[in-house]
Length: 335
Image (tube, rainbow, N blue to C red; front, side, top):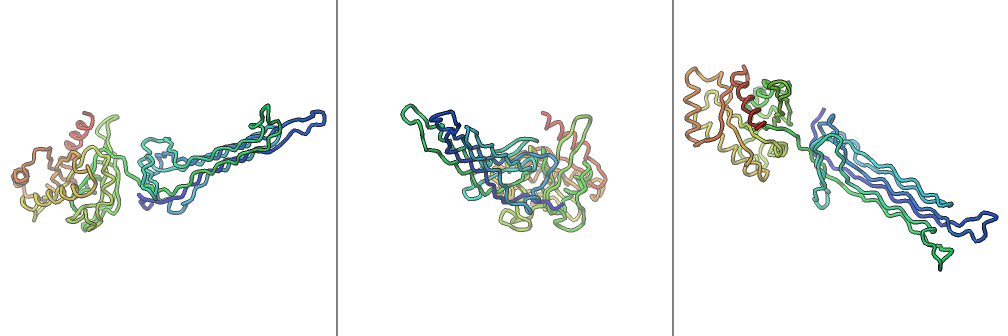
């Protein structure tokens, strides 16, 4: 299934039913008086969170959603039937914006959560509502009001605890394959990952967290280079960032430190507040570093950066160091 994280749809709430103009006509009821009933309320349109969905691809083929109109009132004070609401299933993590104004209407964070995006029209009143001691035969009614009509821009932000960032080919997809059951594409060329992937990491009974892998960043990504920073919105809700750094030869301390600073600069220039998320350094591909050289290389990089945060050395290919990293992440998330 193709991953789609943006869509534009048109939602139309139902119009309220019109009030009825009617008078009693029974044979033995002289001057029966007004008995026109009210119309029914129009149906509203809701977005409903559905945990079985993980993409907005369905909205590429179905773009218009309309709730039912309210029924008109009738004689004998019979009210019109209310219009049925329209429930639109959407993935958890979907945010709804009004396309024209950019107003944020709300977001879906839980399964079954309902978000009102278009309110149905109000019912019209029948003439029996206007009778009084001085107006025994009112001929006044009110029509139902139109329902709201909106063009919505839907944006999906994946819900994950930990996000992976780094250069293309830093080993992010290999890492998520090593620690979870996710199976993203892995190859030896840049930008293998074309869309975000999620993986559930289990470290014990009832102890797990979700990792999100997004396409790699290159210099100038904040300005649109490569795949840009479009997918970084999926990291806006994560609580930690794992910054994977490729230290396989011919990498050296200077180039690794430059790469780390470059990714930090792209994060600063992308989504406001994203760079403030706690970031852990993960030096990957230690299996390709000659024995005895990995420790000094990592220490030199950390000294160059004056890094004070957590750092780990792992091999996503053979799994070395991955278990210790996942246990540390679980402890930090629980804390």
